[in-house]
Image 1 (cartoon, rainbow, N blue to C red):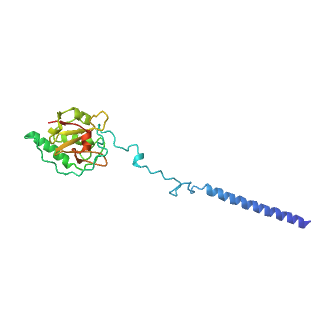
Image 2: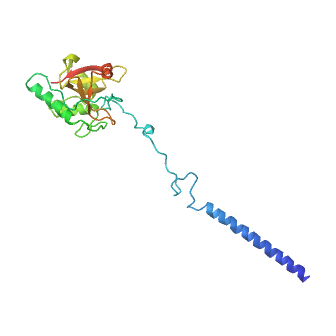
Image 3: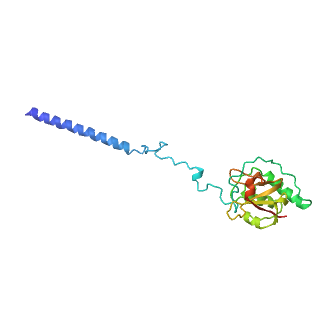
Length: 221
């Protein structure tokens, strides 16, 4: 009888030990899963936080070149033409007008490479119309701030009659309204601020690229 009781007690003791071991093992698993140091799926930094996706320029809401009238970025894809950094000699006549034209062209030339910034009008960064506005203002000639308003002021000039210091206008609008402006330097060249990828530089307006978008010129002194 005692042997039978002892066997029963031993059986229950063994069963209790097995249940305790199972319970301890399950608690350990749950503890590992709930640990704050356990990295979530897809984590790449080991700290429990997923790294944010990389945003490219094309994803940015500010990507693109913006408006070209109210101080916009100018030409989107200008032809890459190597031109001389030296301004062609002026042939605007004599007297004060020559001095003003020389001053405008000389200042514009000194700013070659100046960075583009939307809405800026100098002295270190410029948008397209802001560059022209600054060069004229520093030489005592006040112009409207917007490209479209510049084109509506001043005196119209035929292309064959252009002189250094005149402004030349181009368009990217369906209605052919002026949206891009540069300072004529002589010799078929003009200088302008363009966009983030191409700062102040000299262009050859005799190229077909510019002939197609040319809309006119103005003189202001």
